[in-house]
Image (cartoon, rainbow, N blue to C red):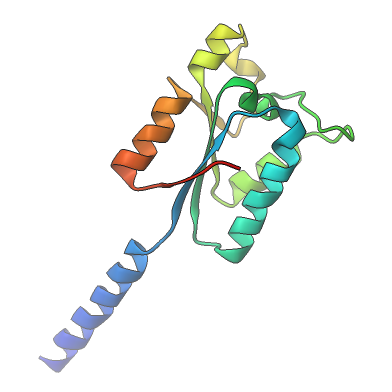
Length: 137
């Protein structure tokens, strides 16, 4: 009986700890001029809280750093930092409405991205249905 009670306590503590994991949606709709700083913020966020679940949702000019040929003002490609963050579990979502409006083929996106029907609807869904905290860098 004692072992069962101890097992129950461990399970309870483990489920409580899991329930406390931070889930954050970064809403990005600004151009490449701010993208390096945003990626640095996300890196810092993960360094401070490695268990954080982070989703980056982009639309409008915010998708630009996720294009295969995108570079910062110093000529550095964004593909490296995006790939590194994806390797740490960060998800990058791109608005299909933006792709359609701007006539951009999804094949021009970095392979770490996922296209969603609407960026703003995805932000709302993550907040309302999945309990994500909203951050606007």
